[in-house]
Length: 153
Figure 1 (cartoon, rainbow, N blue to C red):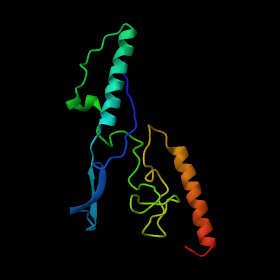
Figure 2 (figure 1 turned 90 degrees about the horizontal axis):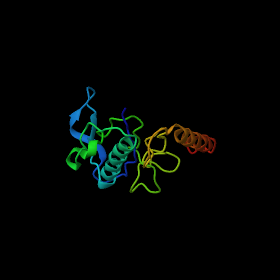
Figure 3 (figure 1 turned 45 degrees about the vertical axis):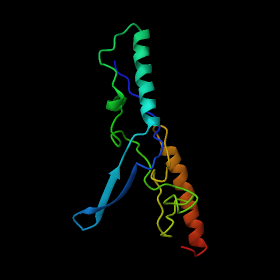
Figure 4 (figure 1 turned 60 degrees about the vertical axis):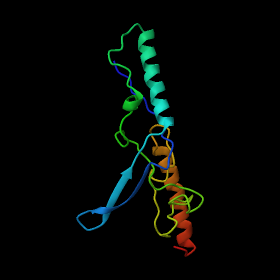
């Protein structure tokens, strides 16, 4: 028997993507370079999960065969990006100072660029973001239609 836990990653200044200044793709376009660091929030979360799983097994009369992962091992947390439903990368916000898109998923610096997927999410507790993506894409589509009819786009 095995357990697997999921938790929310809180955005932090040490986890971001940028254009790589040296590496380019076959067309000469810079590729993304990812920076990633788990914060105490995530490490405490996974430690609690490990302890909870182990106590459930013990309460059921079972025996845990693997040692408790240490903090240096990240308490067994998976590498960032190893689990599906990863979101973010084009943060939605109220100003271009701290976000990539506005409330309509429209890029601040390119009026005809809209991001209608999971990229505008600033956080996601676990999985199954589909319904929120659908709702955001419907709102974005309605906004695009309204802007086109008004002749703005």
